[in-house]
Image 1 (cartoon, rainbow, N blue to C red):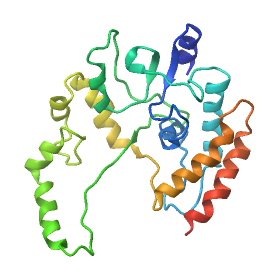
Image 2 (cartoon, rainbow, N blue to C red; image 1 turned 180 degrees about the vertical axis):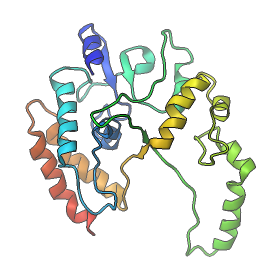
Image 3 (cartoon, rainbow, N blue to C red; image 1 turned 90 degrees about the horizontal axis):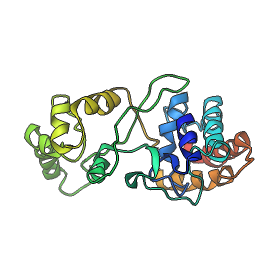
Length: 242
């Protein structure tokens, strides 16, 4: 953030969190609060932890970075890292392709250490079979075929594969030619090994909207961070217990 604030004073933007430039997709903030060991809710999903000491400290840090230090573009500001308008961006390796024609040097590095130490945040995707499907047996056969060794290798061109034998820098380099194997090993593979999944829950869409609305008062100068986060928990705790 110190480097981002310094860049911002020179006329460019500092740190950009893609898909959060509209201050709505709050799950991407886990790439920051993970450094404090904070989480949106408990591991069993039953208790809101938005107002935990760790989260309050992390969000206070972020709020200061936005509104005091100007290290992060504020609400209503859209900044394109690939156009060379920002110092840093938190992103996914699949987006590296947009830098093919970049007129500046760039690098891929792990998320910085937080007060808790090193951490990583990962997304996830999966394919399953609906138990009540009229063709569950056939779908199960297809799923086994879809995820066998050969087809998993083909799928690896789109996502880092869950199969340990395929989760190698060599495999990922085939579909990410702009990235070096050393970068892929250090950032992606090692990151997956210690990464925490972005906030997910049953009733995800309703939770996303509720938290987004409850966080709105935070995105202005002078906001009471603890009070806002207490308000988030007041809104979603009944939903978590349902």
